[in-house]
Length: 194
Image (cartoon, rainbow, N blue to C red; front, side):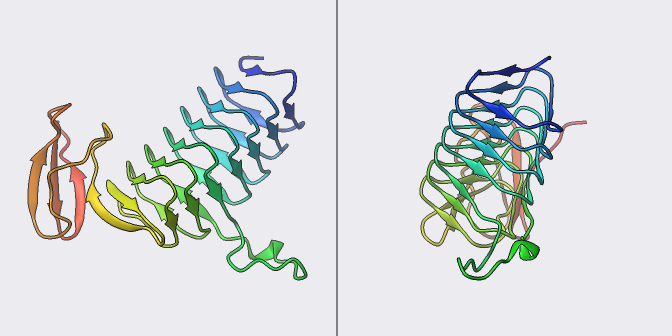
């Protein structure tokens, strides 16, 4: 075994877990889950059957990742944040055939106690503030807060707020990395050096 599993954890047969990953106390990983390399699953995490977790993700304590959720590489899930997979649940009506796909793209951070309503895409390197409720798609590099979540700024790959307006055309440099970001047509992007 090239990954670490605490004796109190349950990993069902068939689960795929990548090299160097760590499965901590009281975790349950279902048999259909696909977990990448270097992933950390904190205490009391649940990972469903139809879940894909990319390399180097960090899932903090008390997070349940339900079916039809995909996390790309480097996603951070803060303590007790919530995913859903049924949009309009009722106890008396079974809706397992109505699960909606949720995609969290590379490098995004989901703050403690936030809720991600199913069926949305969370853009690359976006940042969802603690306690926010996301019920629509999030742009790459967007900083989102509140209930329902609204964009208040742009954020760098380093995780610091960028000096950019929400709309218009502008550019700035991350004070920590020197990387250049450009705002154009309502989207922020990192200028890649060739």
